[in-house]
Structure formats: C-alpha cells, structure tokens
Image 1 (cartoon, rainbow, N blue to C red):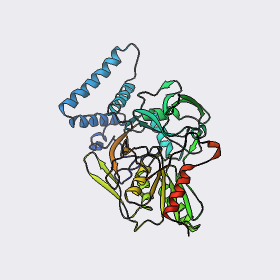
Image 2 (image 1 turned 180 degrees about the vertical axis):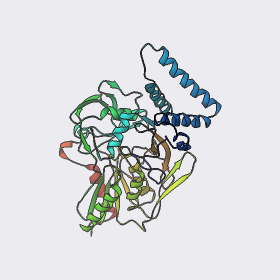
Image 3 (image 1 turned 60 degrees about the vertical axis):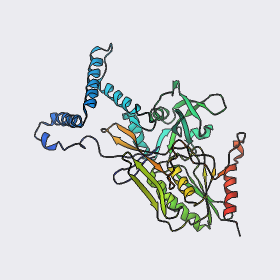
Image 4 (image 1 turned 120 degrees about the vertical axis):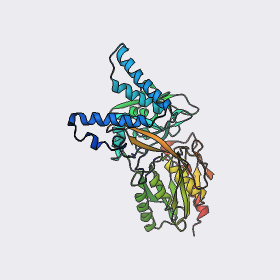
Length: 412
C-alpha cells in the first residue's frame, strides 16, 4: 500500500508513487559543470555526486563500499567469462535490498520498472493475480475479477510453488510479478498449492488486464451493494458517484464488498472511509523516525447502516477501510480474517530506468491496532463451504451480510 501526500506522490500494488530523482537531489552541480564540454558534464556530475554520498558515510560504510568496488574489479578481471560491470552493480543493488528481509522492498530493474509504470495507464498484460508473501511463501492475495486467473478458479491464499519451470523459493515478489506478466496471448504455467490439497498446475493464457475498481447495484428492501476491487487513483471519486447513484434509486442501507481487494493508494482508502465513518481518525502512518501522521474523517455521522464483506484477499488499503469501520463502530464486518498487510511502500527512481520500492512506514487503525501479519477478524464469521458448486453462483457470505444488515436496519 502506498502513501500519497505532497511530499510523497503515489503508488500501489498495482499503482505507482514517484519522488524526485536521486540524480540531482544532492547538492547542485550545475555551476561546476556548465563550462565543461557537454561530453564530460555527466561524468563530472556523477563523480561529484559519488563523492558527496561517500562524504556522508561512516568509516565502516566506507570500508564496505571499497570492498564492493574491489570485488567488482576482481570479477571483471578474473572471472572466466566476460561480464558487464553494470550488471554487477545492478546485482549488488538487488542483493542490498534483499538483505532487508522485507518482501515488499525490492530493486526494480528496467523491465520491472517499465511494467509498473504501464499499470498507471489502467491496463497491462498478465493473468490477473495480485501477489503477496505470507509465511515466506509467494501467495495469491486475490485474483482480479474477470481475468484468466479468476476464470481458472485460482483463489486467495493459494501459494505459488513454480512459475513455468522455475521454483519460487527465495524469489523476490516483484520478480515473480514480472515473470507472470507478459504479452497478451502468450502462456504461463503456475504450480499452485492449496491448503489440504496436492499441488496443481494451471496453464493460463495472458490477456489485457483492465483495472475497473468500482461497481454496484441495488438489491432489495433499500439495500445497496458496492464492490471495490482495489484502490486506484479514481476510486474515491468513483465510490462517491456510485453512492449518489444508489441513493437516488432509494438506497437506505449498504453492503460494501472488499473481498479479494488487495489494496492500493492510501489516500483513496481515506476518501472512501471518509464517506462511511464519523469524525475522527481513519488511519495513522508511523514512519522510521516514529513521527505519526493521522488521516481523519470529517463526516458528522454515518449516513447508512453498513455491512462490510472481507476475506483473506482483503489487504492493505482495504484493511484500512475495514479497520476504521470496525474501530469506530460504523458498521459490521462479515466474512473471514483479512490478509494482514500493514506496511506502506514508496517507489524511488534511481535513474530513468530503475527504482527502489521500499517500505517506509507502518499503519495503525483508529484504536492503534497493528494488523501486519495478523489481519482483521470479522464481527460475524461467514465462511464459504469447500464443496460449494461454483456453477450455481451461490454467495453464502453475501447472504449472511444481507441477514446481518436486515437485523441492523429492519425493513418497515
């Protein structure tokens, strides 16, 4: 989940947050290089920037940096095959981030970075799976509705053992995403493990994945139903528009479906929650320095009786909304425990073609709960039977939500 503020632009699981380029963010070099020939200006500026960063290091860091340079020269000079120094440096950066032990912090090489940027256009080539890491295993957070993964029956909580023939053990999260994505019409084979079952292979044909985040309809007895599939840059406004549309059709109570919603932009989750919970804190973000930034609702009081559907695919920004509603008694949560991703990432470009995605903060619910690795328990448990026939299009969790909402807002 990504934070969007003036000092932090934006990102997501599938969206992007960009800050000022590192090149040029250290002391200004323009005066030092402007009188040099153009061919040497970049080289001079780069050397000066390296010198600046090294001047900020302590003796131990300087020694380690020297070891890195020495190792690169040894490999280039003595390795049996020819190697590119650039590839060695890229591998070093990747190893540096992997050493953090955080699956949500990753070095994005040019291929991964360009694919991420494509997502901001609202579509990309892939199979429609949002991935996370749970218990150190590559895990399906949620399939995206109407995609090849959804049609194949891939479910939240499935672990991915192999992508084509490559084992996913120790594979970085965004590396796995890059391997699963690809050109429309091409195929990828995923070996999945579902709890209590033998591993199974799924051969999927990639398609263009279009991100539509808000849908809704009227049910019966004045009940409205709104489904949020994720939190993109338009979700807050689209949710408000859908609310108004259903209210014009006579909506007097609401079911908000956040099942298999993998999250997205934190500012959009705040916008949605701000239409549902009373005045007070929605979420607090706590950074490295311990400074807490709190986002609040200005709503006088909830407009409608509310039930929220959650499951193991509800993660990140969707857990912000669910957590605020539960903590502030603005509605009831129905379903099963959510995924449990309570960290915030920032995407920092290193140059024009690569970037670091790095965890910069954690978030807390209004009652100061940390849900990272824990998830949110529903107020009313409603499970989907394992033997449910998918062809019958039954939805026992939605049926339970309707039942709970009737008890909260009995029809006249």
